[in-house]
Image (cartoon, rainbow, N blue to C red; front, side, top):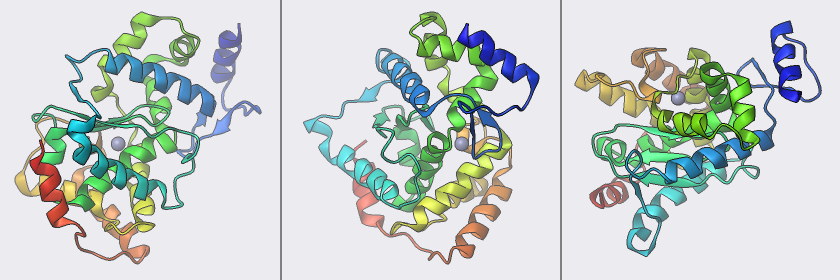
Amino acid sequence: MKQIAILTILVLGSLLFSTCSKSPGGGVNIFSINDDIELGAKVKAEIEADPVTYPIIPDDAAHKYEYDYIKAMRNKILASGQVTLKDKFLWEIKIIKDDNTLNAFCTPGGYIYIYTGLIKYLSNGDELAGVLGHEIAHADLRHSTDAMTTQYGIGILFEIVLGKNQGMLTEIAKNLLTLQYSKTNESQADEYSVNYLSGTTYNCAGAAGFFEKLIAEGSGSNTPDFLSTHPNPENRVENINKDATAQGCKKGAVDLSDYATFKSKF
Ligand SMILES: [Zn+2]
């Protein structure tokens, strides 16, 4: 019944109730932070039960260097003082072994997945930190639930949180790479990537490096989350650099040799 009431609220328009929070993206997110955590944990369990779609490199002693590197990067971003839900979400991070996939994604509740294809494509730690900041922003600003609500409907998401509709949960988990964020949310995740990195030793325009590389190579056959056609890569580079300049950020990679070692592990 609660779901029907919530759907009615949505249909009636933009009424704000105490259970609704205004999302930073400008919309109304009727999911609570705990709902994001619940949904994210369920999606994560599905991802990790499907090694064919998601061949995750285990976070074990044999891969200590790789995971120490990526977790240190995540921790620097979380310690920037800019991540609102830093202490609410687990911010678990996993690397997926697929050299042909140039992508990363983050579920609601902050479970982050990065493909080896992306790691190998990037040139330095600043660029990876920029992408990581972008993905953290999608969860922190709760864009992930916004996007899933648009794609699947709020009723289905609440069913999943309540432990129902396993079929749709499996479907959602399988299709995370094609989850479409709005143009506003993409721009905002870029902007917050700069904000987060401004509180670290990374070049806060790091995310721009990724797009610059793509533009230079004329690539764009597939459309991962952060290189979706809206807004176009040129505009994104311009906006990221503008935000970074406004924040007085320095230019220049900080860990070229470390990144080369990290990359060589895959
Ligand atoms: Zn994105």
